[in-house]
Length: 144
Image (cartoon, rainbow, N blue to C red; front, side, top):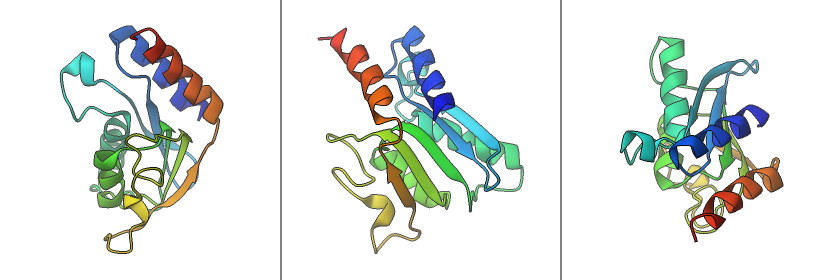
């Protein structure tokens, strides 16, 4: 999570919402990392989770399935990112701050554990939640 927080802080240089993510192999090796780059790239899909999943799949070189992997992200994934976790067959999602406006891993929706979903993702929320939340609060306070 500390690496994800460092990535989130890097978002501030481009006025992107500070969210960072890393994908870990079952043995704990970093397979991929990403940060929010929607503003920087002008791409609505450039969320930290999507960037990290793409990097992880590329590092494996044998397809898109990330079975056994863990996504660690500073903010609860949205619907798009939760769908990407399911599609990539990620085993678990560990996140910092809960997102009571757009979270899809237990707050507003629970897409990753829906019984109708093709794959279910284990969820652990609240890891270093205060640090993650403080970074987000600071970012949005400067915009209000």
